Image 1 (cartoon, rainbow, N blue to C red):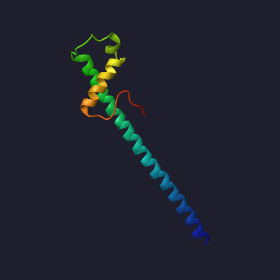
Image 2: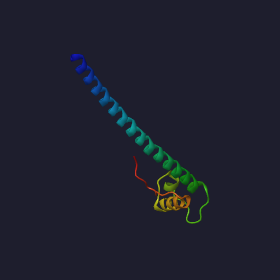
Image 3: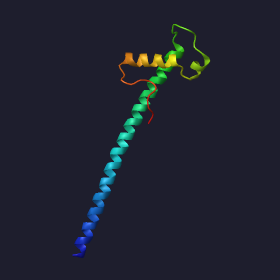
Image 4: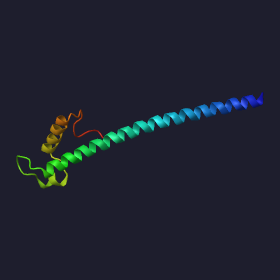
Length: 97
């Protein structure tokens, strides 16, 4: 009888550990997916920033702040226009993880 009770308690503890493990695996998979999407978006914005700085765009000359990486409103408008042309459903700035 005591052996059966000990085995029951051990199986309950193992089931609880399995549940915690499963929850942690699912949580980590969601976190990695969010970080992957954020990395993809960062890469797109980096490419658009390169395009902004290195392709001759009509209009007023670029300011030193824009060239240095401080985004002005006209750069943000350019990014959002290009993102729309690319078919992306998000706009810059986007929420960080």
